[in-house]
Amino acid sequence: MKLKLIKLFIFLFAVSSIIGMASAKWNEPYFILPDSDRPSIIQDNNGTYWIAFNSYTNPQNIWIMNSNDSINWTNFYQVTASNLTDYEPNLIQDNKGRFWILFSSLIEIRGTLNFNYDLKLAHSDNGINWSEPVNITNSPFIESYPYIMQDRTGRYFITYSTYGNASNNLDIYLKYSDDGFEWSQPIRITDSSESDIFPIMIQDNNGKYWMLFSRNTRERHKPLLNKYDLFLIYSADGIRWSDAGEITNLSYNINYPYFMQDKDGVFWVPHMTGVTGSEELGIMGSMNGTEWTDSVLLSNYSIEGYFKTDYKSMIQDRSGNYIYAFTSAKIGRGIWLMNGTPDLNFSKTRKVEFNNTRITVENDTKNIIRTIPERKSNELGIELGSLTLLIFVLIVILKRSS
Image (cartoon, rainbow, N blue to C red; front, side):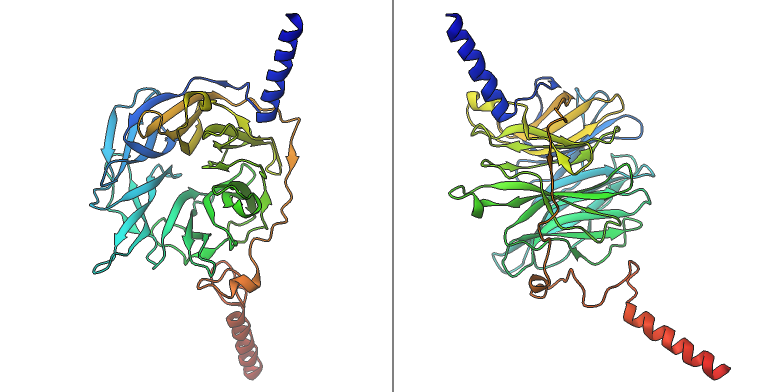
């Protein structure tokens, strides 16, 4: 009997090691809102918690709710009132206390059966009364997976995915603004033979920019039809980016990530993991952005039957606790929260090599929006060729005057 128990213990230990079962201090997920999707959670400057989300009933619209304790959510405010579909909200509060929500909005093309999605942006000074949304993009392509952030200097960045390349896959684009109202032209960030989605950009505690995204890797993981892995790039200015580093290369699906850095400088990526065959809650971490832990399992829903745990968001609040928000179809389609503290083994990590070509000149020349310009421009958009011409003219004038 003892031998059987010992064998059982060894087996369970081996299984937990393989799938990376977490010993983290997380409470049981709790259900907060039915008929809702894509939660984006923040804690504002006054300590109030906010979640922007889209309704899951037609027509879908953007809503926001708040809470004083992250447990009881009783105040709901409507942000958009579209007859079509507004969804995928991303919520921030800027350094002046203003709230912003970026989202995707369905655009109906009159006289045809075609449709399109543009990105729209709304703002509020109190989180309750919201401005009329304005278009941030207006192209013939579908724009989706939008995220917004503000850096230390006050500059805003928007990242998103869109169909705009020769291979008809989703690439990542970026726009920036110094006031949130006047935006730059789009900048292409990736051009892959497969789709890149969930482009989440942050600035770390040292001022360095990072962008995490999911890439479709099904071609090298056949016969899987739905297979994504996580990739990372970095930048010194938020405009010019490194080649990509592959964080995961697993036999099962890793997708629906979020990306954040906590007060101690630790990077966290909550995500969906398909390690059990169901869509489970997962998390991984890094102390420096280049060395990452394995994907660690936080749930085991396979024993309860299949259901989705997809769109993610996570914060560390003022008390140091983490709140992991996600969408699940366990009780219809709705939003769940899980509170706790990640507890990962950072003594066992894998170093990421940033050696995946982010974009090539050959691919770039086929695209409508260029990433690698023929003539380099500085950040203010002054062409170096024009600057050279100006210097030449000044030299001629000075010679004549002398």
